[in-house]
Picture 1 (tube, rainbow, N blue to C red):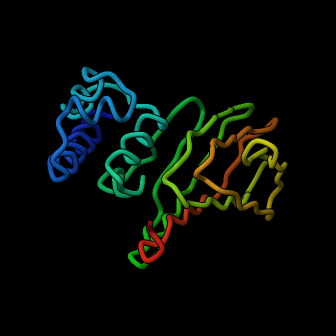
Picture 2 (cartoon, rainbow, N blue to C red):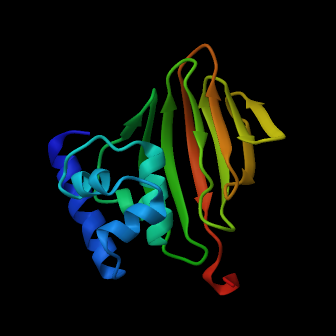
Length: 176
């Protein structure tokens, strides 16, 4: 991410943290990241990974899309690019992302918020995706839906992969 995008993300992250009454130390501890890394991120510095941004979103109790919404460019990490396409405003909350994976790129994603599900639709290339014990090889036009509140895997094949990712968060009406 370039400096203006990092500045935007940092200001937005800090505003969300303060709105929830969390200290820098508390959010860093809850998200499992170093306080210094979170501080640098809020200052518009650093190079956050997708997993770091996901962990922060989970701890702030906001969809990933809410955290990255002010950024109008893809987030890059280890051969993968993710760009928010749209966010629903209904209940349940739905986010849709465009994602591109370099050949042989692999990402082990941490669990998202409880009750969330993820649906992957392949546009081009081939991708292995899913939770442990439920990984599927998908080709163009194929989809797979799985519980996103469990660790899950994305593994690209021999060529670039383009896909749509739809995340449906737990309904607030069904929240416990």
